[in-house]
Amino acid sequence: MTLYSHSKIETYNSCPLKYRFNYIEKAKTQIKGTIEAFMGSRVHEALEKLYKDLQFERKNQLQDLIEFYQNQWDKEWQEGILVVREDYTVDDYRAMGVRFISEYYDRFAPFDQDKTIGVEEYILFDLDDQHQLQGYIDRLSYEGDGLYTIHDYKTSNSLKTAEDADNDRQLALYAIAIKKKYQDCKRVRLVWHMLAFDKDVIIEKTEEDLLKTLDETKANVKKIEAATEFPDNKTALCGWCEFQPICPHFKHLWEINRLLDNKYLSDEMASLVDSYMRTSEEKNKVEVELNKIKEAILIQAEKQNMLTVYSKDTRIRIWSKEVVKLPNKNDPEYPGLVNTLQRIGRIDEVKSVDTWALAKILENKEWPLEVRKELEPFMRKEKISRLYPSK
Image (cartoon, rainbow, N blue to C red; front, side, top):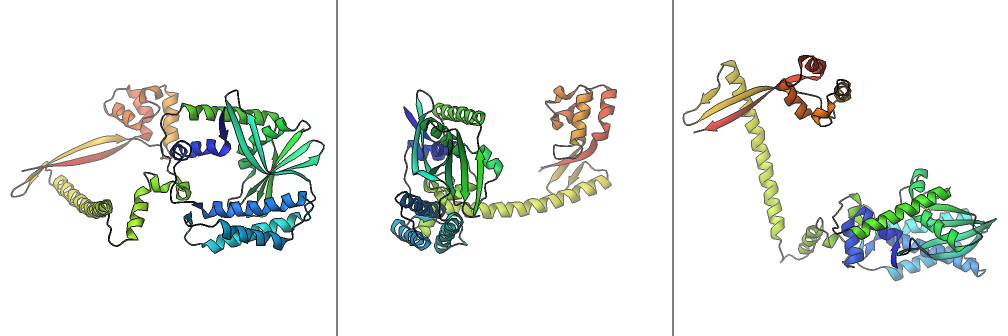
């Protein structure tokens, strides 16, 4: 049986190249993780200790948990943890973790709302006869009358909405596992503890919702196993990716930073990039000046009714034409154009409103006069001119 997890599937969906690095090549880089993930792990450990000790009738005081958190931070810290937001320090993130634990403790003490079944509860179930899905539940609790609750601790600074929760597949998959695992389970409540906001997002999934999630997950697995290429997907989240040093979009940046640390090393590609940018800027300046000169030539030539103009050594032939212009998709009049084409039964002839193709049809008078008249309110004439210099 091939083993999958929610994070494995979501890695592929967010960036197939990252999936290849992580799950196929099992690549390692000098990035050991991000500060957000590191802080999140330490907070999870503290809350895991809180509930595990309660199962043995030991109630930690808040200061005990904070001390444990601080010790785990020092113990697990290592070079190579990436801090993306340069305005904030490692100590800032460390303090955030203390706040998360403190606010959670104050809100839920004395922690008698339910009965903890397990912390970091391992789940495993068959997706089909060839694939299994595994995962870990932060905390699983029981509230009586067949109601189980899956708790998920989130340290993100982005507050999950009800819509986000409805679309979340991870806890839905865990709910399927709990229903399979515990015979007395009648309902599964899903709770996201948004620690940065001291808020909870709580929903329950219907059987129909769970079946839909299961079908979507099977489809995702099928898509992954059919993949022969693993393209990159550059997004804003790339800044937090541990595979930047080997990613085609970022590996040169990492090489540059390495070379900057050694004054005896240089990078030929960086020099080429700088040269390109300088030349590009010069080219832009020349093009601006060239357009001004072109405009002046066209104005003077039109005034004097000239189609070829001369200097001592050069001549320039002027070509001009009036063309039809129509509203493009960003123009407020575009919907009206589409409606008119549909009404007169001509939309299929311009490939779902290819305005360039439509303009050519109207210029060449390929449609009857009465049809062209229907479109006149959307038409405007524009003059285009080109200069052809020669010696």
